[in-house]
Amino acid sequence: MQVLRARAAIIAIVLLVAGCGSDEPATAPTVSVQVPPGDTTRTSTTEGGEGQTAQPDKPSGPAEGAEADPRVTELERSAARTARAYVAAIDARDGERLCGLLAPGAVEELELPVNRGGCAGSLAASIGYRDPRGFPVWEHGEVSAIRSVDLEDSTAKLVVTVVTRFADRDELSVEDDVIYLERSASRWLIAKPSSTLYRAVGVADVPPSVLAPPG
Image (tube, rainbow, N blue to C red):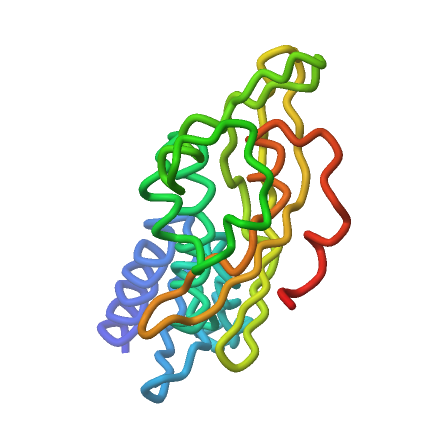
């Protein structure tokens, strides 16, 4: 009898020592939840071992640049590239490049201040023209954003934001330009001069007709 009591006392002491060995609570068992392939939900494990389903990952949203936006078609991308190339050619005073981007006859809508006997030479000499009447002298322009691209059959209408610097002004000019394009074979061409080109060749009062579709 005494032997049994002694054994019981020893067992009680061992259990007491084991229970006092650490102040940290026992770790709950981890519960794993299988997520089906393609599911975007995430599962977290609580201290009690119960799985909690978090909110699905939010989509990253459309990219700021049209080139990276999956919702933009290749025709829209190429139209946007043509509009940027058009403004870049004006900025570079590259008459040859600019004439290559204009649809046949489009340059005839402009009354260029300098005539060099051809499209390329006349445009190159006219961009940045200093009018003796003191009109603003165009110096630099670039596209800062493509606002919209509207396609219809073989034509396109783009609204782009152009930042312009005039040589005789301290502040930059920021305005939206409407650029019309037309398809020719496998590429886009500028259907008519936009306000950016008018300003670049020294036209102070851009005619309202630049906003109308090509006739």
